[in-house]
Amino acid sequence: MRLEIALAIAALAQPAMAKDTRFWNLTSATVTSLELAPAATLVFGPNQCLNDPDKAVDHDERVKVEGVASGVYVARLKLADGRTCMARTVRIEAGKAFVIEDKDLTDCRK
Image 1: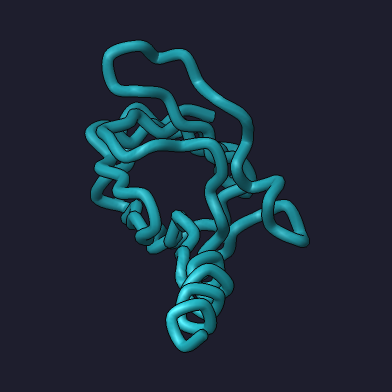
Image 2 (image 1 turned 180 degrees about the horizontal axis):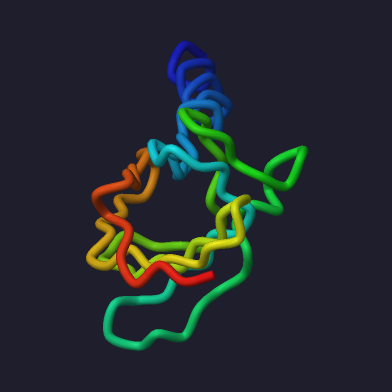
């Protein structure tokens, strides 16, 4: 009986312990679009900013990222000021936050 209770508690607690992968915006701009592509492909996935209630990720804000496995990615960011920038070699580990800062942004164009 005790074993059954312990197993039931462990089964219920498992989903609660799983953490979301999150993008942490440490750029100085609001990000209105974040698309990720495996580093070797440049085939970008959906806009992850749509997971945020206001569809944008402000400075020092985090947003849940869905459908992305651990690995190295290229990020394409659209910023509120109209620029589109790339961030290369973004390392993502499932269940953890990954950071993009101003120093990571390259190839910015309006």
